[in-house]
Amino acid sequence: MHITHASFVTLPVADQDRALRFYRDVLGFEVTADLPMPPGRWLQVAPRGARTVFTLSGPGMGDFEPGSARGIMLVTTDVDADCARLTEAGAEVRGPDDHPWGRMASFRDPDGNGLMLLTEAHQ
Picture 1 (spheres, rainbow, N blue to C red):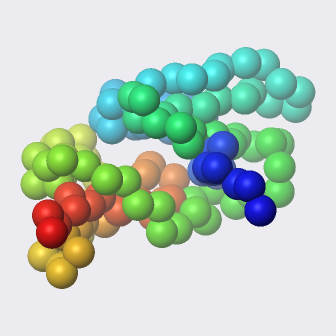
Picture 2: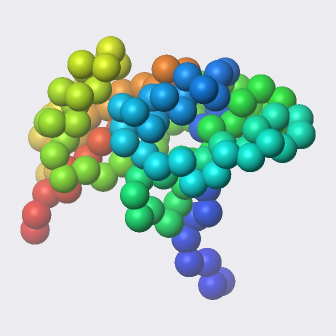
């Protein structure tokens, strides 16, 4: 096996423009692709410098149920500040809580996809 990384993670969404506003304007992700692609639109976002991108897959772009993605961990240098920003933007945030591996919180995007934030513990 010679796998080096994941190319993209699919986030099923009902409204790509609404999802784009959340991922770009709230989370600060950059748009890496926004192309017409029958039967919909190929829309990808990512944190600056990331190798793995997120495909905001809208209606007609595969057999995905909006809000069905779970367990996506985003690493941050300041989980508390990011939680405050998410709360200000209207997201429901659980945590942050301390764990042996770091300080972690969870939230959902506007479609209900489950994401987590982690500030890793320094060893």
